[in-house]
Length: 142
Image 1 (tube, one colour):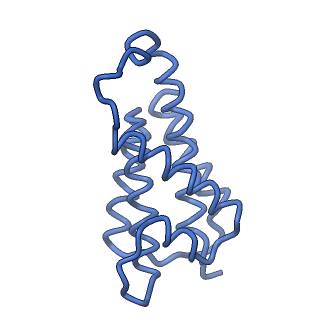
Image 2 (cartoon, rainbow, N blue to C red):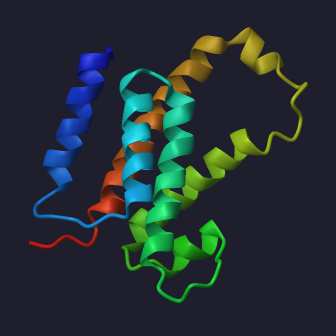
């Protein structure tokens, strides 16, 4: 996908999931905007990382208890359906593989097959922006 097609994909996701209005913290808005910019410009890993950050920020704003929960706990206690929770856990685990690289010198698979990695990242970036939209549009004012 080129940049125009990526922007069109984001607009299509908004059209698919947004039926009314939502209220987001300004922190969340900034992170969502950065996620969209990363995705639209093909920075797929950045889009994944920022989408997870946006989800966490959204849940922290919704968590009125004020307790510092880990992301896994925020997902588990969120008022969203189980399928979306499962998607977010998939996304969280994928993000963790990149953020917490156990063997950074074990890079032979990246060197031997970079196209496969690029395809995987593009697929996960699309998965991430879709899941993000589902989260931030989960409590709409209609």
